[in-house]
Image (cartoon, rainbow, N blue to C red; front, top):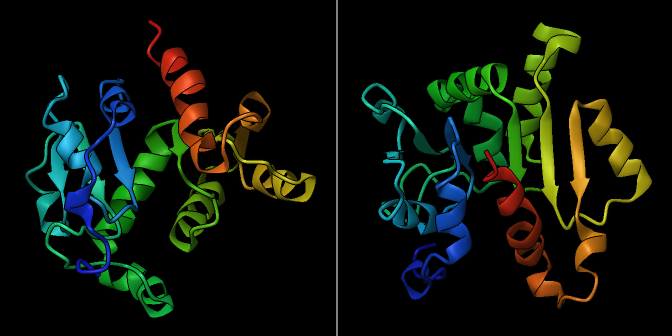
Length: 191
C-alpha cells in the first residue's frame, strides 16, 4: 500500500492547516495518508496523534485519531471487507472512543460519504441509546445528493449540508476543496 500511495509526494495544504486551527474536541479520520498529522505540526492547538489503541491511554486533547490506520507505519490499515467485518472486535477501544465522541459532541464530517460501515454502526448505536436526544451529525461538502440519499441520511440523524450548488463552476476534482475552503472554514472559525 505504501509503495502504491506516495504519501511523501504530497504536502498538507492551507485547508489542512486552517481546519486544524479550529476548536475541535477531537479529529477522527479514516484517511491513511499523513497530511493531517503533518499539518498538525504547525497548528497552534497541539494535537496528540493516536495511531493505535494503546496510544489512547496517554493522549490528552485534542487528538487526531487514525481509526483506519496510517501509511506512517502501515499497521492496522482497514481496507478489506474482512477488516471492516472484524473491526468491532479487533479495535474495540477505537469503537468505544468513537461512540463516546459521538455521544458528547456535535460531529462535522468533511471529505466523507456517510456510508462507511463503521460510521453507520457507531451512529446507529448512539441513536439506539439516546434516541431523539443524540447530537447532530453534519455531513458537509459538495455532495450532489439525490433526494433518496438525503432522506436516508436524515433518517440516520445526519444533516447534510450540500455545498454543490455553490461550486458548480469548479472542475470536478476541485469541487470539494473549493466548497470546504470557501464556505466551511470561514464560517466555523467565526467566534
